[in-house]
Image (cartoon, rainbow, N blue to C red; front, side, top):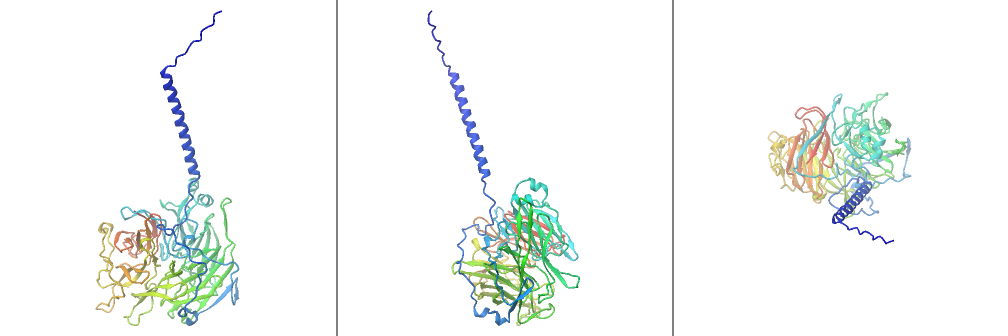
Length: 630
């Protein structure tokens, strides 16, 4: 049988084309799959939500040495002011005290693990009302949203200090809280505005939209100070009562209340009518702060409190609790102080928010004295006379050049100046060495002594600059004597945005370096209004100043861009919010919110939130307003 010849198959060119296309398709698919997997890995390994950044323009300098301690100068010896203090631990009088669990605060940027502004001034140094940085395009303020709020008796809107809290909750905490279901379903961090108001409500709003994140808490009390969120990220809210209510015995009682933000319920309170106090008036305007599981706050009754909280939060179980113990009180007495608000010129009580550096607390009082107190012994380390009542909180500034801290303070004007006409006195601004109590420099300005409800001078907390204004400290005044038509005087009404051009500088006096006080007019008095002054930190020289008819209770708020460029945002009692170049005082833009603003705003990146009183201004009712900074 003949062998069959094997047939040769000839490959056609079309075959190679099809094979090439098929291989290319497989390779592309493999690359796409790999990319999706990589993208998924990147999502799963996403950078966690950052904590607050104090100085976005530079790497923070090293901490001060561990051995930095307070050693007072002779002029700050408490005995020369007749100071003594009494201590009560768990209801018992003690002659001395040493804390079993030492208390110490970290640096300002270490205060809170939550992004946002969680207490008055943002941290234990009270040096920032803004979180993050701004991105500036046209240097304008625009309304983002508004919410109408109400009144409780004669107390409407938000008051002094009245700063909102803005906090970004992580996903696991959102899931545990009593927020609306849509926010839980979003499975994303929630940036929430928390705003106790004087109408007796605590409002909860989503930052971008102003939509309610949960039902308000109706406390039924007047809340005019600034609250505090637990900086450990626990959903706990601490709210002070600004106006007391008579208890069953007819005594004025006031509390710091603690709310669970898991259930929305009140789970604790501190205060009441405290018989340990040397002053009958009881109120808590100052914003508390927390370190080492210990709540620290000052009362307008003249008592300095610390409370061990024993707080616990279990996000998975959805529980949060406190079991307070170790309530420790320190009461001071001093020469010239009156227990009755209607007599004397020096009163007990702290309306300012307590500041802290490590184990040292700093606060001013209604009697015009600044105290440094060791948190672990409650001993008064030194006392500085700041001349007159001081409700402005002490701002702490670290100095790495000379291993020191410096304190910036401002006083009201309740006492007539001996060389001034009736109804006028001096408001003082000071830089003080925080480790010795020595006054580095002091400045003064003529202001009205006002009346029983409001005096002139400074109730706003100063801003200590950083970034491109690290050489400046900025103060805002009320009922200040105007400069008699000098270049520093601004028009009686802040210009509208249409009337304000970038670069306008007629409202800024950049020439005055020393004390050039205004002279009385022909009638023997002064024209009064608001005043903002930027001092050189080192010398106290005036770098620029601004004056206008509307005065200031709100603290100056400064926001920074990524390069450290600084923008001052100042609310006034005419209802305007105005933005300035913080380096020069040049006005950039202004908006009218329609009624008086006594509250200090808080800022989260490019969004600012503030409340209004619903009185004065152009006649609008009380509101919470969000402005976009752009």
